[in-house]
Image (cartoon, rainbow, N blue to C red):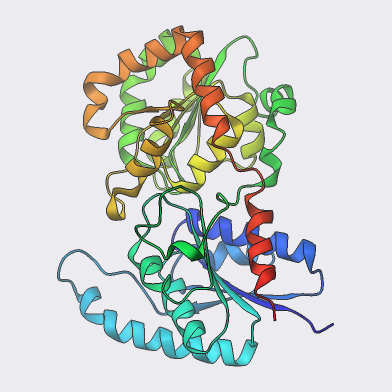
Length: 363
């Protein structure tokens, strides 16, 4: 049997990179002899994260369009031409069987080039509201794996496969790891734990909220485990001096912190939402309003509409946060309802199902 080859592209944020790595890992488990190449944007975090996961990566000179007239926007046509040219060169040299895109700037030119060279392509769309790149690529793609229902208004209906988002496989058994998580993070087993997630880089408004409300949170009886992101760690690490507070830039064992947590406050990026569906903890989503097409609010609403979480917009935090949090931690029926409903939305076999779609395209 000939050696299979796969190119994967996705990046800019962890939300695009980690699904691509999860898909590569599953493909590798199925086809141990296969060769893999990642393609990313040359100045983004995928250039570090992908080699750390054990895969080769090539960078393209590409960036997104800004919303106002800037030098970057004037450079965009040149970057696009350069990236299309380099993508074709990479594809000719590597000769992949299938090309997989998980979103982000670099996946645009790469999949565009693959489509023009008649190589099968798969798009994995994490969000409930697709970005412009995937909408454009969908016309030529062979399969579009989605994580939310009702995306026919953006994509050709016959190509859509409802798989869910790839998530870390170690999150599938968090129920059995609670004691291990409490010990690993040195938490007090007699207190409830609030986990605050700001995303890989951090979320400024969420961090400001926690800093302002920390005394209120501690008075309500919880201990706070606060992932503030690497951009904000210097600003907030002094709160580690407080009792029952831990501030970290990054969490190395997500499975164990989810296992130890009783409540979660989180942004509503697609990967976080999919992980929280799997672990089923009562969650307050605070979506970032600063992302393309406001897709975090739409991701959160898809859960809230099924009574699986609470949604607070950034502009409501000052007036509503304290009452919302107090209501949640004092109402066990509400906690159970949210847990049960969010769990119903989990898709634990997403990565395997996506690889099944990829397998169908191997000639």
